[in-house]
Length: 202
Image (cartoon, rainbow, N blue to C red; front, side, top):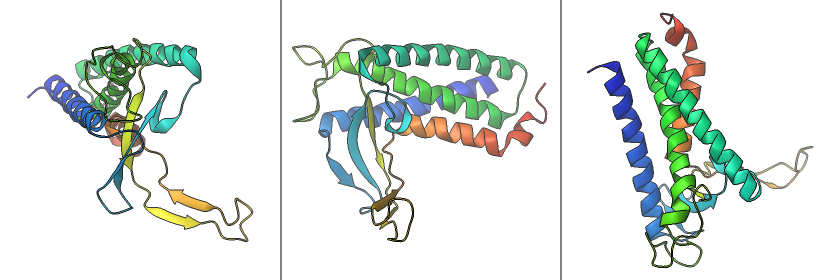
């Protein structure tokens, strides 16, 4: 199988898993619901955000449009870069890492672009797909679905700590999704194995 085909299949696999999980969460849970998987150390915790990875946001409708346009430009740029490194026979690991980043960016753009149109709100009940009265928002104004939460360490800062003495401390606090994970894993892979990935790159 060619590198290009492996890349396309990898991207599609990430997108399919990402969207299946998001749609299931949207249609079976309401915001704030939790399903424990590994006790209180790993769970599905349904939230939605208006912005970037791991719940970071840009304010207001204008911020949403700016972020969505940025995502579209980034996806076009990453797609062009991925195509170019495949043509140059770059290291397969490098190609897969860039593919993961592209898949993650695309997965979150899908939420932002279309979820507001095709889903009802999730605040008081699980969402309905293609509700009779229309979705909760418009094109590029949808919210990104996050659900993976792994608060592995739950403790308190010591009283003598100069930083937040006595306050609760949770690691890892952000709630994220498969797309966020794909982007993070892709970037970390490039940073860790950059020497090997770029060794034969020309």
